[in-house]
Length: 196
Image (cartoon, rainbow, N blue to C red):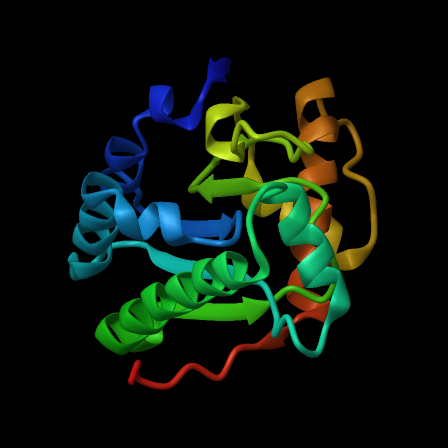
């Protein structure tokens, strides 16, 4: 399915119904923090005793990795450098607070490369959008939703093999899962401390 804007998907319901895993690969996460329905449902899902795990991929330090500034200029073409830094700080504080609250239920990795697209994985559902040099932000762009056997595709990606006998949808989704597997293999675990 194709949605005009991520709001049409109802992320708060999607997170609330997650059973096994949630993967966020759509930095920065200030919009998640600012939306009380989305952040509340994420917190509720993680608070369940048998709820899902959460894996988050964030941007590395803008002062060490020049591509982060270039990437943020695509996401926020009219934003000042100070505004971009505030956005990144706000995202990092949100992630720090989640990690502090839910500890071992959450894994946070710094992306090793500029992401090719934003996506979220919730159990066997992949939601993915696109980046564009535009004043219209990524959340307001087109988002697609597809149901595929994520664990099977991830196992294939980890082992470096294309899934055999996969459907067209599975092969297309494998491209997204491959980026996820690459970021997990090459990224470094973020060392998050309590926010000051």
